[in-house]
Image (tube, rainbow, N blue to C red):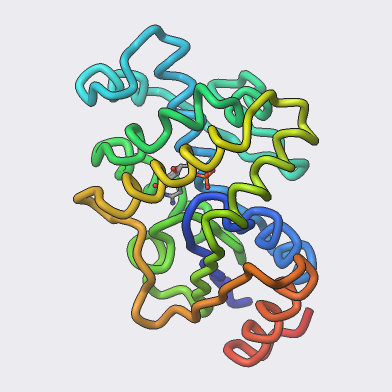
Length: 224
Ligand code: DC
């Protein structure tokens, strides 16, 4: 029987985790799982239903029967609807931390995430993958970068996608999410004791990917 390896990449908002995780997954031929997209999809569903994303009692009513599919080509489906673009808009980004702080929502999504990781080798990025979702992951990376650097990356990403934003708004959003994500009661953003920290402020994407692949090889013997 072949082994299913789990690579966990955690870190604060806009640290470049998804770009890196996607490339690492491709190099290893593993499945990339963007857990942030799942919290964003729930946030979108809550807003679309006209509910208040700061109200837990209201927000959890979208959970029963909800489906979230992460497709190979990065398309995100929520109840069959293509939400790939809308989940990156400021309205969703500005509310997702409230949704991600709700325990019943986290428990539902963590179940889905663990089920996905049981079936195949995965590279999973998020905030609590190494500490809570996959505590036995063979490789745990904690990817950080300065607030300015992260805001600039997110700003450039938005420009590229045609999403109108100002640099000030992006900095505020990144700071606000850092605070809420690391101060929530349940499974907050935190470096796992056995995670390897990687400050990517002065690194190119290629350098980060290479560094992670080297760690994967050292820890598992798996070569890209
Ligand atoms: O990585 P991202 O910016 O797409 O994540 C969106 C939000 O979801 C972020 O504010 C924190 C939350 N999140 C989380 O709490 N746990 C995860 N495993 C992934 C994301």
